[in-house]
Length: 107
Image (cartoon, rainbow, N blue to C red; front, side):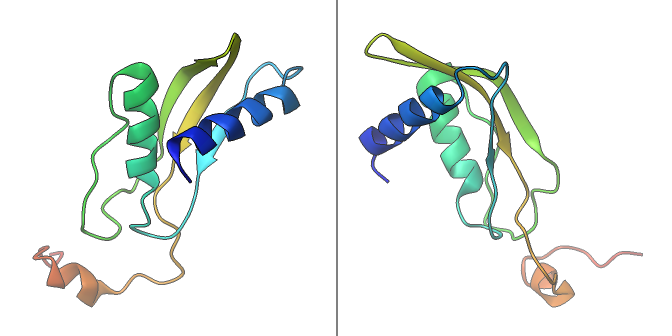
């Protein structure tokens, strides 16, 4: 989705949730699918800081990260929300995959 498309989507979401006190937008998906990269782009553009670090190592992100009160303004309208970035969803974690990235065997 292009950057302009994201703004339009967020403006539509804003109109749906006008009566709610707090909005949380969660990024969910497979391991290493770009969730934190997207969260970093959103936070960098509107907060001037990144959400968290990214990695090529699968399953390295193991905790939920959240930025509160991300505020987007466009054409006199604004949307304030909490952005939630989650670890990748996996049905199975292969120990051998970890070993390929040079991680040490547990003692």
